[in-house]
Image 1 (tube, one colour):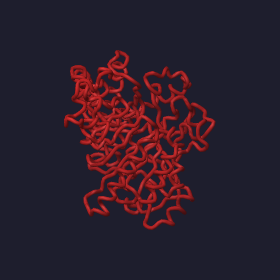
Image 2 (spheres, rainbow, N blue to C red; image 1 turned 120 degrees about the vertical axis):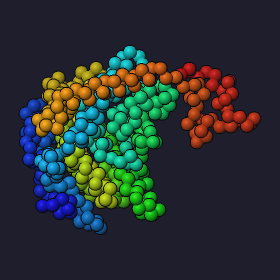
Image 3 (cartoon, helix red, strand yellow; image 1 turned 30 degrees about the horizontal axis):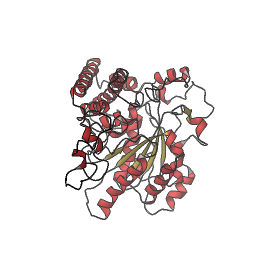
Image 4 (cartoon, helix red, strand yellow; image 1 turned 90 degrees about the vertical axis):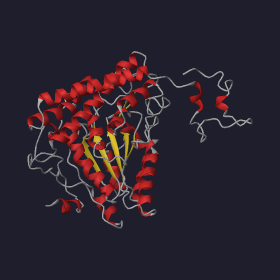
Length: 432
């Protein structure tokens, strides 16, 4: 069956994410034994019959992820999912995310960072698998665990580290910090400290793309938005409202659930009536897909189809990536609530280790190639720390900027001068 006929089909049959190359990731999980079939699931994805009914009552065709994984064709590696260049790009991006976060932990405990810092270790396959498929004009909306999303979208490591240090050279001039990364240049529309905050912003960004294309007749505007959020968000009202809006208006958006099985210290299995989040997609008339979020190649294949659907004007997709964070909720969390055996189980499925194995076994890279990337990234991260450490702190007057629409912050006084320029105006405020 060719790819066109696959894409046009609404599949009601289950399909494997990787039917041609069985690996340990495809086998049913043995440990830990769950009380629900969800935990550690590698079940095959299907669209429910209710989804099919919902899709039929809408005008136009809504497609599901193909019922087979499309094999990437190339003259040199006809049966592989990626080329050598793609594999090395994925590996480098994942190594950058991991090394950067490890360095953040060191800097936090040395007192270089303040407030809460939430690290992404273990979840790199999700960020890399999705974001590296985007165009520069596509948008990403993140959560409070946003450093690696920013790096994957192209924000320089220097700018992200400086922001974490609270310096003027940061991507938000030191005013955003760990949970509020933003870059207009890279269309990173922000990290958000409260769960669910970013989903309406992402929905609005997707609406902008559709409006430009259909109302303003900008034919080349095929921009897509990715909305990242966690399992703990999926019982919140914004999630349901925005799924409804996105499906109703066929917005070019992909809702990406990074289900790491824990919302701070609350197990996902205890917090929701049906832990299979992907099933909520068909309830709103969009495909709902579950994928192994510890395997970047599986994530990437699902992401390609979901992003492609959005770009073709075929509407939104809900993708649930089952993943796991290797550290506590934040660096202030001693991580004592999760079972050590559960943590060890997922640590053994490290997505970077899995990709490294795939690259070497399929002759896409040598040990020397990958070690060279390790060294390169070490230098990038070390440089980012040095740059951030040497960068200046913001001036006191900057505390009042970007509070209101006035670019100077607190408006203009009776004398026609910016109020923030009056030395007495900031008396009593803390020095940055």
